[in-house]
Amino acid sequence: MKTKIKMEKVFSYKTLSWGMIVLFLLSLFPILYCSFFDYATGDDLWEGAAAYQILQQGGTLRELFSAVFSWMKMDYLGWQGNWSSTFLWCFSPNVFGEKAYCITPWIGLCSICAGHWYCFRYFNEKYIGLRKEMFLFLYSLITLFAIQYMPYIRGGIFWYSAMINYTFPYGLTMAIFVWIDKFLNGKKYRYLVFLTLAFSFLGGSGYLAIVLNFEILALVIVYQLIKKDRCKRKKALLLGIPFILLLIGFAVSAMSPGNAIRGGEGYGFDISTVILTLKECIVQGLAAVPKTLWEVKVILFTLPLAVIGIWENLDLDKTKLKFQHPFITIAFLFLVSCSVYAPGIYSGDELSGGVYDTIYFVFILFFYLSVLYVVGYIKTRIDVKKNESRLIGSPQTVLRIRATVLFLTLMLGLIGGKYLLNGSAWDTCVDFIASGQLKDFEEQMQERLSILHDPSIKEVVLPEMNDQQGPFMHMPLTSDPKSYTNYATARFYGKDSVIAVPREEYEALQESGR
Image 1 (cartoon, rainbow, N blue to C red):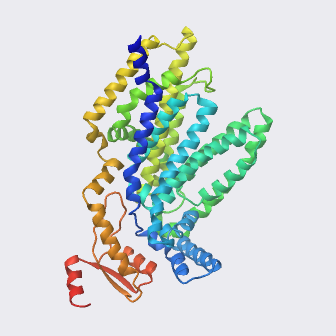
Image 2 (image 1 turned 90 degrees about the vertical axis):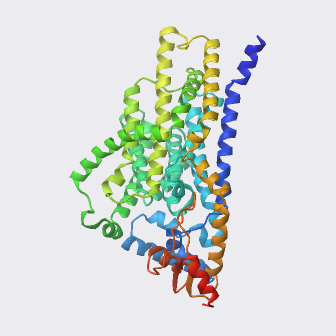
Image 3 (image 1 turned 180 degrees about the vertical axis):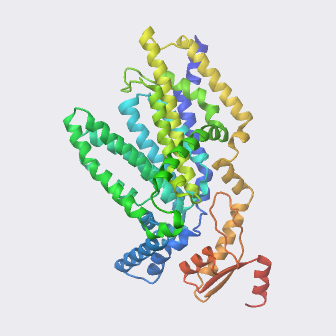
């Protein structure tokens, strides 16, 4: 009896959830440490130059926004149409100070962590009914995987221009899902205001978030309109306000002359391209399932623990989900996850790393929703047939299975930990710190910034730095003053020109007094 009680305590879900929470928090430490040495580069400098120069000159608030909107117009006409993202780009944190840029990773992490927490907690309490311990375990597990194995952490977390265009809208989308449900099922119209503001913003942001929110809101509106609930029909019609604003924002973005310039002769709407895009979305979506599970092996590695945890902690008396159509549900989730490939496929352009991050986030989210639904479906069928949920035996048998699965997971994790961590944010950041590269990067950046902030130097010569800087996005300066990063740097710091030369050459120039 004592052994049984001790076993239940050691392998309890309370212990499991707290262990997962601690592991999740520890996994963030290297990222947060590196965040204090993060610096702007490339697009951050190019887009933030207008606001930065006004602030340096002590301009008024009116002059600041006038300069920003003038730059937004130039961007819209000559480069690309994401007008709301452009507005935020103009206020890159480095505009307010070099070290202010350190807030970038925190915004990215908060977008994912807070977005997941707000969304998962709400839908679990209202519809799913997982017990608290299992909810905390799954939240920590999914969020850890989303952050640690995102394909392009340089852009998704550490580079403001990509983070604010992809990671931040993803976090906002998590909140939007909650606001839609709260508006439909409550009496507070403030959520309609939130949705109106959010969809107005998303219309001019990254196209993947537009596609995802367009689909979900369209399906919600159609579903509520065909139901007999008059109150919800009325609210569904009111949801047409943010829906239309999203479409208007997207139309304004899509019609940008800058998009046409970048897209070339093939830019524009073509029905044959749409059909091919839809087909290719499914092809790439199918290919991504085994590819992602192979690359992020830790998902399958921890899947047995997640399955048995959901099985034991899904309260059929509390859940409002009926778990009746697993194949239809999984097909729906799969098709929605495939849809986020559409913007990149249709454009045919070289894709930003943030695109792959968003695709991965959606995959992780829908993968675990599919697992939850399948487990719920099987448990519901067993409960209906036998009036008990003991597909795998008595409570004692379940405890033994849980203990065995947890023990094997821990042992295999300890044995193959380095292999499982390969390519993770933890691995990248810890290696960057421990190797001394981070320290070297900080010293070189301080040297560079001291020169760039010297008002007496107008034609700047800097020592070269390579672009392999661990988790950081760093667009290297070259010897060509007309190259993009050189010109962006000169524009931001108000220099006539900026070039970079090998350090040996730079030191020789310093010794010669140039």
